[in-house]
Length: 182
Image (tube, rainbow, N blue to C red; front, side, top):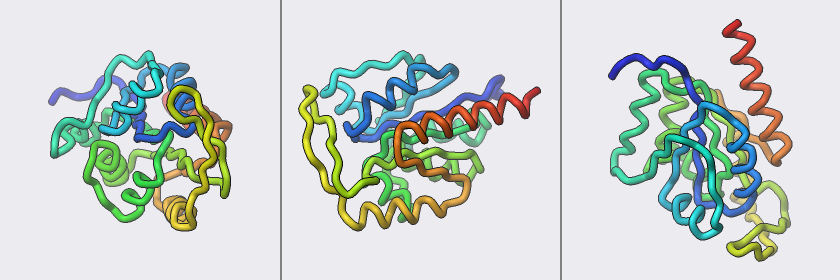
């Protein structure tokens, strides 16, 4: 593989509809981003009817998560996993890498690429957007909160609890990268 000319951001979507619209709104303001979709994310994007303006999209279509090799060649400066389902958070905490998104998280960690995770289940009671703009109440479980707390202890991993934090942490990371390249 030829050397990477310019590092990019890797943004991964999971199967969460909770704050999906807001995450895509942030994603659409960024440049030099590749999008990674779990199988559930590909389904949920269609179900909710949301679109993005990202050029390169990788979907979870191979058993070995082939696109992770890009991390070995320094293609990415940052990984964002947002929104992240409680299932994905639990897998990441347990070291399970059985789909494209969890493989990206694992390889980013092994390659020391900073990762930003927006774990959706952060409040005891939340209103969440369901398909076709219906709002529903959800009540995350104790295990969801415990896994999010564990994920916050991982090296090179920043876990955010809301959209403002997600936006702020991404902008701070981009500013840091810009300052270090000057």
